Image (cartoon, rainbow, N blue to C red; front, side, top):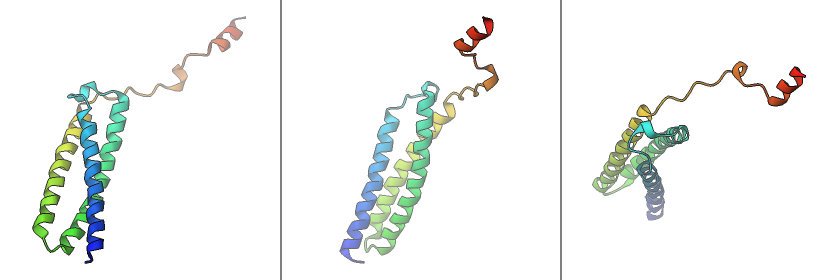
Length: 125
């Protein structure tokens, strides 16, 4: 494998690690309990968890390629272990928050919506 190709793969892996760091930073800003999450925070956290699952699959494929092509596989395995440790710890915390989050209120049926004031005024005259 050329040094340029190896450098490109390592750089791409760095991008995945940066995204993991962003996810960790986001989770640090979350309340300690899922009970305190707002509906907006719950939705955002769900989207970020989904994105992290995709990111892990991409990282795994890239890291496997690096491991297969590298002469120092032990170093590459160490990189995988570090990333996976962070990934599983952060994803577990995110899922705990989501599991403890209050259920969203049920959607309000259209037939219980209040009538517009103009409509009420025109029917009473």
